[in-house]
Length: 368
Image 1 (tube, rainbow, N blue to C red):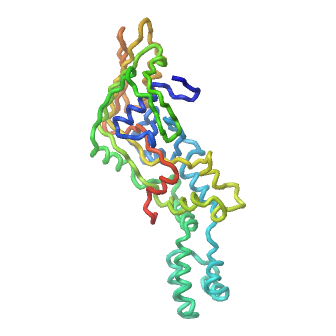
Image 2 (image 1 turned 135 degrees about the horizontal axis):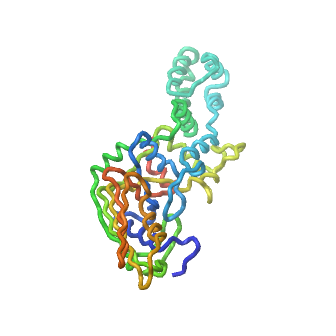
Image 3 (image 1 turned 180 degrees about the horizontal axis):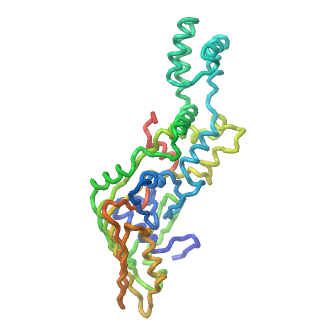
């Protein structure tokens, strides 16, 4: 098999396909996390969980989680919303009821009009008293303007910030995840480097591998066998809370120019949705297990001696080091076995399902 510089290790590809097969996943959306992060309970457990949903996935077979300003959903969404221009409400009202009427109503409000649900009743009372002819048309126009996706998104985001929130929240937290795990089922499976499946077609990140070879040449000194069991495993899919407005995101995605994008801003459609845009792919859900127990057996080939670096490289591939993760190593002349286990009830993230922008938008009800 011909490998390129960016090709993943063969056992990584084989393990990926093993997870897809045994966990009922699809290479058209699944991204493996390596090593699997552990969500330790504590005072920041909700924020730690939401941080994964806040990260924008890299376009790759696997992902080594890290936080950076450039790949965060919330910060990118805030920049996007700030670059959009809402409909000019005053201009729209003037077209319908006339400048004189609108100016008179605005003056009655102290020259400050707050575009919220109370505006309809304020205008209705004023028009009924001063000019009943414009009442119905004015009310209908206000209702339409209140539904402007740009203004709605900006208002919701501003309300969230003004409420004192400093971190983006999702509608399910750590406690919800633990409850869902408790109601989930176990799963167990095996991996054998002698018979690992290396075929890969239609991967969401564009990776292709049409050959299906044993690929043992890459494991120069050993063969690899894995026996894995998860006490519980579930798919966890929360949604962003009130800071996110799906109609705003959809409107921005479906319209590249002005409106709604501000021509005077350096922030444009390409920054988020172009060929190298930050938000071309979004995390739909996470595949999370608990009570993980993995036996990794490395059998040296003829005349080979396993180095500690080789053993560490393979063991570090599976689960990140944590106070709730135990690891033992048993060395024999014929094989080295590494056992890695995590405490029951403590979530371990196996990976996540990634979708395109358009598919992410479809996950939400139309009213969101």
